Image (cartoon, rainbow, N blue to C red):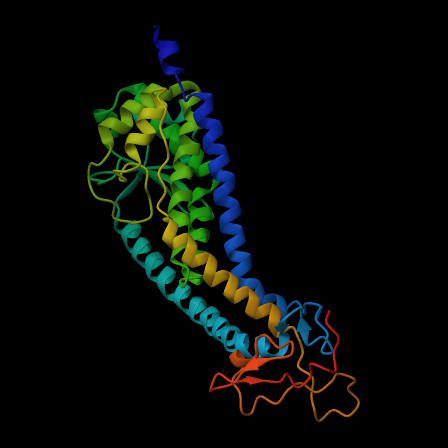
Length: 351
């Protein structure tokens, strides 16, 4: 096998297709979680959702909509407070992360790379502008991309001493993909959303899965020409040092490195997820409960004092809990378990 063919070994097409399907599922799950978590509050109060349930419609089959409204209204109020708490928590938690990151970046002795230096030559071959590259002596990480508005690639000043020219080019090409796709901004936005919905831990786990896919996507673009040099560089650099930013995963994630190396070498590598069945089931139940509460609050309760209302007066819940009248088509349960007649069983025909 020649050097050129070895460098183009790349990733097997079945692996790429399987991972593309995984990314679509991840993206759909994240978007669905965000919509289901936010629309019960935003859709009802900000967008002015259409009240598709009329006050006159007090039943849906055997289900008493008025009792269901009263049962879920406190859940809707809790959703309000969770959203407010999430905004505060996201501002505090993300602000603390940004402050730590700013302090570390300010303390790093960053220097521009000279055009005739090995790092500069490798950057130009990788299609990376040397104006966006900074070298740092004593950097515990080999290389990483940082910055939202004007991202930069930070590399260890001695990186060219630890890698071959092809490996150095592959590492810088990988970082160039992150820079071009503005991955720091995209990942920071996803982490902020996960903090906003802190009561859904599964969203933070899904964000971790998406971070893995960001690294894999960058690997795939480099693998078209430098698959094996990149795999060799990851093998040399992986797991060395400690990540001072807690926000990059490239060379520090021990569980991600074997997958990256195997797939770049042309082997079949199965992606592992940070999520679990239990966390997904719990999140689904919480989201459905929250969304159902928002929908039911749209159902207006008839006002018995409004003489112009044509809606029949609903039963008096003064001596019953709403849960005891959830199914009211001719009967309901009182506190003692005795059957009590539905007050409006004869005023409405079954729908």
